[in-house]
Length: 355
Length: 250
Image: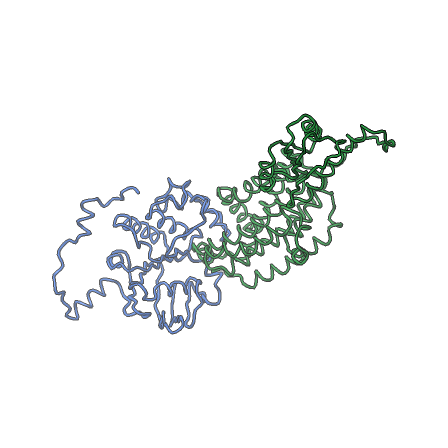
């Protein structure tokens, strides 16, 4: 026990003195959060309407009325230049106004629509129709409109960062488990350090235990740092319990550490580690819903990703952070990770090589 | 007798690397295994050190059968491997303390380092040491468990003449403290200067085993004459005369 503790302390020392290790496990995930945290993927962009033809006053009036709608951005230009912008995808709608056009003129309004952006186009048309109808209403006496009252309610704002941060945290746990262990262990083996250790009475399991303990401590630090940064800098809505997050993280960490040892067992050199680790981690990184919700995936793919260990971990972490779920509610994720950890530990033991 | 090797064999596929090797080492002896690269020196040593399974034959170390009691043997021996490698990012002091823990011992790093004249590099990391210093450090690392028997595999390969002589001094000092040293080398003058007894190994077999003066005497007695009489000094002597016997601080 004393030996394992001393070995753990020594491994922690080695780890913290390694710049690359700190960069990979702490700075890179933070960088991802900062990068994506400041990029807004939410909300509808402006609906860009081009107004062509009609240099006259009624045309200017219509353009002005459209421009008052908050989500609309109006540009004016000649028919040919606006059409060019439309084909380039820079307009959603282009109105081609006849001379002296106004709502009551009875003249036909030609609208060119962008086929590539059906949602914005549709919305743009509705707004256009409403602006024109308002004008018509104003000129005729018409039946009264349905009255509406507005009341603002403060509601829970779930921002992209709330979605992203638990995902990046899970990703960081996976990466430092798989890459850290596989790369580190193969390097120790190749440099002959393990061989040197095997002439001492130390048993390999003492060394492995210390490595695992060290990695799990790093993992807990990752959780604290990322959640802390999220709360301080990004107003992260952390609704769950940190202990639940630790428990989920440790179980996920166990899976990925075992996968790391498995890869270290089958890779002969450091050069073989990187492609192997990428084959395992890339599909999960892209498809496990770390950056984007898996609901956008094609159904068969989504079904497969359901069973990825990173999916279980990311879903579990996210549910704890966003919804404040407690462990019993996350039995599915816990069971999935437990099963994966049994399988991966078994596989790692099967291929383990000290020398 | 602290080490007795009897009919030791090792095969790698069709290659017989170690072929019925027998020798024994007395307490407080510096015993050399001399031979060209590929003679089977390292394989022999690694079987004795518990690093490699023994195909056949027996090794008895301090009364223990190495094949049967590897743990007890590991407690009694100190090993320097041919390629020196330790954990990165730990300094010499931390490395020695950690290695001591592997034997369940609290060691005195300063004392160990001064044993190999590295007391002022305690805070350095292995990568920052010169070649000779690295070799000396790995000797210190082989001493953390206060072993009865120290195995050094080509301890001076790749070192310049001064660094080599420095290491010889360290090895003699270790012996004078009551330890037994078994080393391999392919340098003839090293075997002749340093070893009380040498076993000459070639193609997996031991072809001679005696103190160097006796081996030379036997050869001369058999009527051997060198075609060219050796000059009274050689180039190494010239080199050492010009650059000094003392260590050029590395």
